[in-house]
Image (cartoon, rainbow, N blue to C red; front, side, top):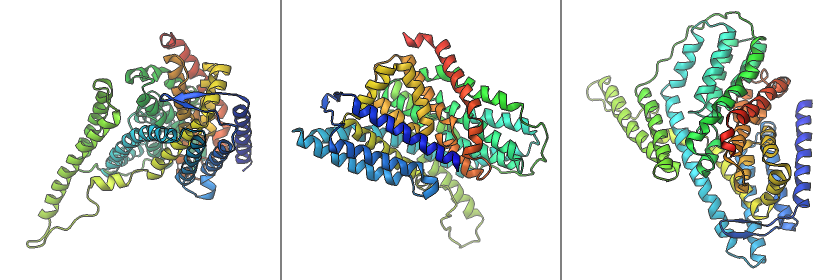
Length: 479
């Protein structure tokens, strides 16, 4: 508990520092050609910031108070935009808030549709036993603990660029728990390895993390340019993994005799998911359309496959029924709309709240002063490194959305750097990423905030090394 108290105290100090910075710096900015008035010192501006801080405090305390993270930010978003509308009406710009909120709604709509399709495909593969089959294959091989440590790390690193880091962490975490059993030391280190690998793997792919997706959809980094982060991401994971490797036993736990077969259509759905990704990339690169449009077309692919699987399952069910008995709907059969309903709606609504809250604060001038302080006074390099550290304490999504909203004038190399740091910085603490939070729930009482923090210095070495590698190997992007 003293670790949690320390974290809360640290978060309060950072917030107070940011508040001091915001009130100390003057700024006027523009967005979409419409002037934003500096109202950071106004009563309504301060109220908006207070509502955001209060809402985000409840998000941080989600595990303790069991209040879904989307609820406080949805309320804060609505109140903040009411304050924005009142402020600009009083300033003689009654139409400003309408245009500004539409701008943010479009940004959210693109992110929402993209994530909804991706989540639906992941849910479809889960329903077809794709991930369960992989897990059972791993636990039934009789590998040593050290081999499992490396296998789960490698798989987490290479699965997360296609799936998301949350799904990847849950899958590999299940393997770690099944093999590690009562060996708590192994479970802790293997979970940390999975978190670091999943976050690092997601950093070099537009699909691997919400922040990389946001950067890609905003057009700051082209699709192929993300792969320049592959080597820095590998280093970010390998440095702590190599050090922890010597702390892992070579003993071979007894193999678990378990087998799960993939259901009909599983391989076809995996193929369609890859086709959907290709379609989304083609929409963006060749047609100059939002990637979300390509993803929705991919949802259509899955819709027809859902119909095909249903026909097959219905036909197979009919053949097993006695003559004269009609077929009844099987609640456990494949259904596209059940897969859509199983999406992480709390997460999707949380993104809405965060984007609208940060966008609303931007209308009061807070993002302009933050940009002035971070990217002008501190410099792009220091600011981008700081973004990674902040994303370990606060969620990386509002941090990255704030950076994108600021649109600081910096080179492609620095945009790649902030993409890297925002993606891998969350590994520094167990609460810094969705992967870490998920595994704390899976390995409850074993993999904890305090036990992860013991290895934070080792993870920090990987963080620093990845930044150094990026600065060395990607120099062409800094011109």
